[in-house]
Length: 392
Image 1 (cartoon, helix red, strand yellow):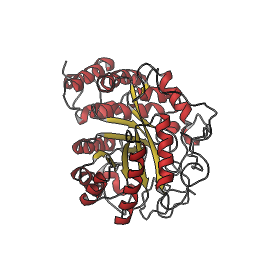
Image 2 (tube, one colour):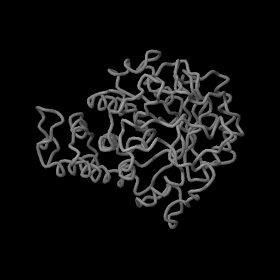
Image 3 (cartoon, helix red, strand yellow):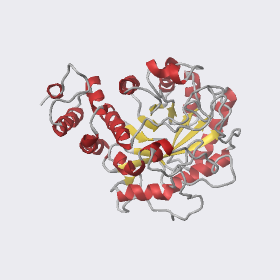
């Protein structure tokens, strides 16, 4: 049955057939190579809570078809933290931020290598080197190149993704020559909503950076942040803008409303709606790495394992300026849900689990609460820029 026959097209976002049947057909259509329509994408975001498990099952069919039961682990290394001149409303490192995030200058290659080694030991396949600021100088590119060389020499199996802000094609080429595999630059939100969250650069600047990265030979990594006051239609809009860029990996972040930022106190998300968002992105990007990124602990909460039935990738450990879940707990969650860490021995039942009491495995990552309105990010005080080991 064609998907169009299952929808009331006069009222986009309204399903006129049994929901489980419509979702099953949607998955079949995607697996047969048909691209999701805007109306179908909006309808997924408008599903009732009672249909979310049907959505997980349908999106899970697509996930398993392309990625089996594998979960790819990614690890963030904040190379330079704070004191950014941009005014992105969601960011604890923004100009004028009162969030109290760690601030430090560039990590030396040895420190970054130590973090990468820790990530590799825990099963990470990709290390993401991130630095605050509008964009890199030539000196910054040189610094990153030295760090990449050190990591690649010690751990040639690791993919390296870099996130340095607005980038020119020539800089992307330099990074590629240095051994960088991918470049992250999220679109974050729709073109129509972008002016509400940032005034120091534009949506078009972000699109241009992703295109420059690709032109320079880097694999594109670009995604979103949801929960910043956007409408469901605007979530669809940014998903379709991303689809035009053909990203190989798509991080889906859920807003972490840091105190001391303009979006402090926002609580627009529920765990079930986060699953709707992930399901829509899986249908739009069936072959891409869909990554559950920042904010999952706060917003998906106990439903994180269901998110892995849709997404095939996640971050391990802490984020740029906030604490994440303990690495041991995440690895246990992956194994308990029946998944294996990508790259782990197929007979091992998943990647070996570090001890829950291992150094750096504090259970803090958000203030525990059943209410999203009470949840607040916990600022990172371990890992890069501190003397305390990270919690991967």
